[in-house]
Length: 142
Image (cartoon, rainbow, N blue to C red; front, side, top):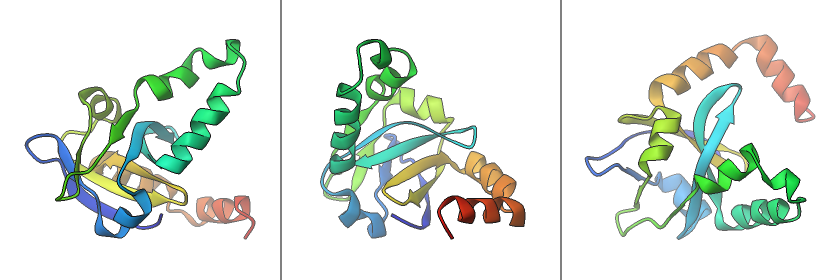
């Protein structure tokens, strides 16, 4: 998944799935807590990626399944877009990410993220320096 897509919550707290992400996300996907460089956002997982995450979680020992790891599952929402490709987010997910109305949906390789638009702007400004971009490219082997 790639790209960034501005969006707005409608009056019922729903978002539209960006057309370029519809095929990749499928008929059902999962949204949960996320964090990127110290900024709160929401992470979207395809059903396949969610199953992998669940399998990894279930393989952990009981002591490793407590704390923050559990919060990812406790706060998750399964999303099934309607015929207009709208999906609802829970109030606790919106509150966690500080989302009020304007959002940015961004692709991040195998996942996507949902950001409050102002928070995303701050994140992008912080990270659009030649030094940080070079470090990121080196981290992925370029």
